[in-house]
Amino acid sequence: MTADANDLRTTPPAAGASSRPVPSVSAGAGSIGGTAVRRPAPVPAPAPNATGDLLLPMRFMVVGILTLALLSLTYAWHLPLLRGSFYDAHLLTFVHVNTLGLIGAVIFGASYQMLPIVLQTPLAAPRAARLSWWFYIVGLVMFVAGIENGLPLVLGIGGTSTFTAVTIYVGVIAGTLRTAPHRDATWWHVAAATTALGTGASLGLLLALSKNVGFLAGLTLPTLAAHATLMLGGWVTPLLTGVAYRLVSMFTLTEHRVRDDWATYELWLTAGGAWILAASLLLGLGRWVSLLGAVALLTGVVLFVGQLVFLYRVRVRHSPDVHIPFAFAAMACGLTAAALLAGGLLSGRAATDPLWLAVGWLAIAGWVQTAIQGFLYKIGPFLTWMYRYGPLVGIQPVPMLEQLYSRPLALAGGAAWMAGVVLGALVPFSTAGWLPDTAAFCLGVGGAAFLVNAVRVARHWLGFAAISSPIAPMAGAHR
Image (cartoon, rainbow, N blue to C red; front, top):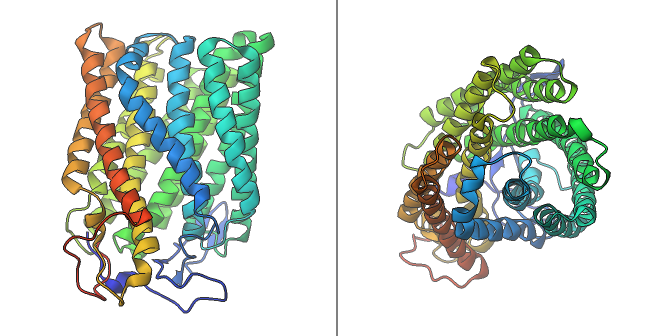
């Protein structure tokens, strides 16, 4: 899809504010928790550097990108672990490198950068946010090292440091939510996700500390299952869906076509389903209560997919957009993972059944990591264009967004990535030696393509890239 200068609406800046053009973001209407949500008039969002420190989100983003680079080089050694057990320390290390090193780092960085834009309010406590990075990076390194090498003390310190980073993040996001001018559907999604993060991280800390003295004993696996459910189903999923409503509608110019009732029902179903499922797994409430939570989660994902398909169908401009294939692939993986989860509970699969490993893989690599890649192909070039070229509009020729990266490489890399995700989901059910190797090769190619494009965008951010075939002055940016 494309956009001209009219799509980057400007407003006279307040004292001390950035003067570069910023996107207009309008909030939706609806009712959540009995609270009426009023649709406000469109107002300009804060400048992309609303944190006051562009290095803050970039630190987290660099951690996520470096983790993806590491994974792309080592998938061949790790994918066979999908045939193992949840108690396997190497598998747990691989999972946490994906979740903490890639997913968590990118979400923290993106939240610190994009939530002020999405919620139309400055980031609360930026100093505390900067402090969270130090706790996060120390916790990540020590936590992963402690699991991999069987070092309970190192694991406990790493878990405590990571939990501290999460606590700071939760406080910063809660403060930002408190000052937001409107409590629309996206606001409630972020609030629900942040609540689940705090609880899920607490369970994770218990698991890490239990490695020292084993106080969880037989509750270790139920606690691990509840932790994973809250982190993936209660935190990441509502956060992705809530922010997607705002970003997708903004980039497709369909802000007023968002169905707020669908978004409300989707939140109740996804967040509520995740909490019901986590409580049932932790407290042993039985298969049917767990199934109720899984079905609610699946239904919520279905509503989200229906909403996004609707927005893409009614979008103002129908030119190809590189993030759309990633979005549809991610949604397909999310639906499949949720359906397999419900089907496994319905059929009474044992805790050791390989189906659960496939569900986890599709949720982590298919649903979340694919969605992250797609959104970063929009957010990264968009913010880079605004930071590097926004102030030059009307002064000199500026490039289109598509010129900041290679679209063919992005699409080829996305296809390779998805082939790897699908093949990886089959690994737990097969003993064929070629299957994890082929999946690893595809994932490595997909990851490498994304990394090459990330470097291309970074060159524009740093001012090292030349502008080729620029468009005429004042023509604006194309998305």
